[in-house]
Length: 367
Image (cartoon, rainbow, N blue to C red; front, top):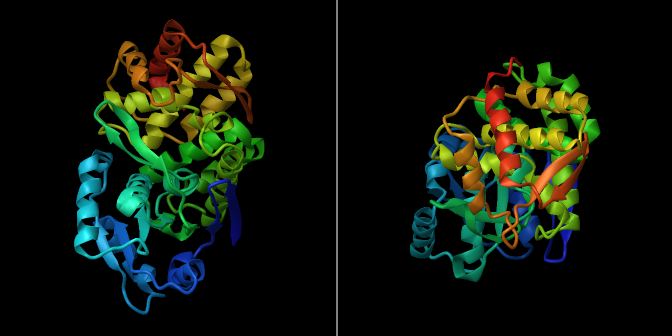
């Protein structure tokens, strides 16, 4: 078992990573809430509940109430939040009630946002079921939903009481979902952890096997969370260092928007966005050709990254609505080596267009 602490001015909580932790939820909740016995509401999707309800409920003397949200990015919208909030109100949820986000990144973001605004804020717990959610979205307190104009444009910082990560949940994850999540681990390695980068290179066969090596995956999950927690501990509100976690996301989010959030999984879009960012870095000579080849190879190795239909011009135009823009300037994360980055605000549209065109050529990458 590994315990990683998030310690920021507004909150302190632990991220606990342990196979089998799902069967120990109730005593852990009692420890977190102390003398209180809150009403517990689980927000999950029908498919996850069908697979994992038995171990989830194993430690509860009385089953918690369960609310369902259909899977998929298209449900990450305000109507979903309103519907869930109405269900909570009709069920009598109050300020002492506890929400549990039991699902992937979309469900965790929605549950966190709901917890942030229901009765002006109630506690919640993150129990992420996908690799993407385990290594990224369940840590750091970002919550929110999408607008037609862009991704995550409405949201709030609202930290969980704890995040409980059970790598055993990854055993039933479809291969494409697993590989999608691994793109966030590749990102973590590129921006801040050369040792994780080498581990991902060396252990790709075991990690990507039809039956993934859970021990290897647990090491990847733990190292990725350490990167995220270390960055969040230094910059909770993304005023500086935390921006590096957006590596690959500028064009990645544009790809998602251009394809209606239907053609690619989030991690797949971020993988393509990472390739575009690497081309910007190569063109600016912040990295060498050898470093570019090594990083791009790792991104593709944890693919395959599916092709999609969008022009480079459209993708660059869509970055204008990216929430990472500051005072009209586009914040862009560029690697300077494997494990280090810089944040720049002077990447021009023509420069980004050239890199994005190169990325589209890479759709035929042989790896």
